[in-house]
Image 1 (cartoon, rainbow, N blue to C red):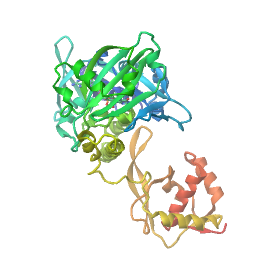
Image 2: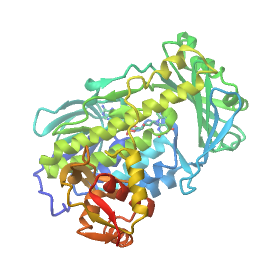
Image 3: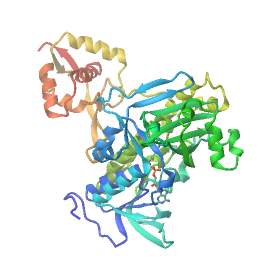
Image 4: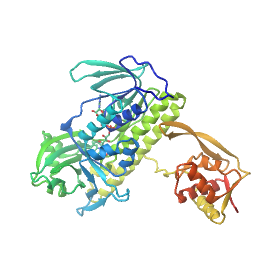
Length: 506
Ligand SMILES: Cc1cc2nc3c(=O)[nH]c(=O)nc-3n(C[C@H](O)[C@H](O)[C@H](O)COP(=O)(O)OP(=O)(O)OC[C@H]3O[C@@H](n4cnc5c(N)ncnc54)[C@H](O)[C@@H]3O)c2cc1C
């Protein structure tokens, strides 16, 4: 293997790799692929894909951006059975509404059959140079250096593999993560999933929308899997539903499904092929990494499947995780800061999901005032308020005033009376985490690095004395990733409000 020149080759005993990824779902296969493309010797150990536990999943249009970032958009588009144009929803109401996926460059979402998607991700990882081992990891010794991972192979034999760094991408299993899990008081949820086919072959998938319907005891959703085939899942609290006592899963499933009015009607001529069930309760993992390991994807947290953001979150986690692993392996001094950045982003994803889930429940409650929905309304009780998308340590009215002052001048200049300095802050940059300068001034309460995608330190560096705003905008866009003018003006207003710059006549 040709290793990038900046990396120091490590000696590999035959069983030793740079990185060993446990779990080959979307998170594991993607992080493994990204690291292999960067020249690391990467091994994935994953259980075999189980087609009998197949699930059709919806990837909303915004997943495309993440798929492109991990280099898999084209392949996944080809593997997607259907484009997803949106949802048909009976949420706390018998009046259905159509929710179209609009506004994402008019690109639709994707409906994927998960066993197919996982197979494709495996092929792409192997193509990138990943060594793929089918097996079940039964032990991870993080204290040893290199880390020792014990694997049971499908033929019953055991195998020890060693790696400098281990990634836990085992989803709910959380082979490393499990000991640091908490549910944040979330109630239990089970998914009972049925695969239905229709003799007419087309009826069930005639409309490729995802269908969602609430009942008193949970919700029901359906995603087309293939022409004439749909997955129909019921989501219930196994501690509450009266059907839980019914011995066979199929009976419980059909009992729960009988509560549905709208999705059920679609299945009149359809045949149930098989039913399986899985835990879908929410959790988060409190410790996401160390010098030798990282927890990514569902292993880090499981968010409400109702959002359809699970795969997107897993891919984002893989993309960020690849940068964190790269940092630990090439620049360990920055490793702790990289880990902290990863933890913050993962926690934001988790708290955002709790707020969203509580919002869904509050919407359903007027029609279904039952314990199932009542407890879910409380999910965001302990969650801090939503932070601003772009936290800026300047009050909004001061930014607005600064913008007004800017509008009446055509240039800006540095303020000689304000002390300006830069503080290192971790940031994702290309394939790693770096300590990038964040701006501080005696008038700013906290460091600020980016406003509306504008890098403030780099913008300030362009204003040595006085500069016309138009020239500054052109100069910034020529040197950095171009930004729209309104974003640039907002960033400039923050600098004026933070007393770093002063509007002047040009
Ligand atoms: C009912 C339901 C419906 C969902 N619907 C959607 C949807 O419509 N859209 C969406 O985006 N998301 C959906 N999700 C969420 C989505 O499935 C997950 O977020 C996504 O699969 C997470 O990917 P991952 O790679 O982190 O974990 P996983 O996909 O769980 O992958 C984990 C991998 O680790 C392997 N593994 C586990 N333990 C071991 C071990 N000990 N040794 C070796 N290998 C191991 C597993 O075999 C698997 O390959 C849904 C989830 C559920 C439960």
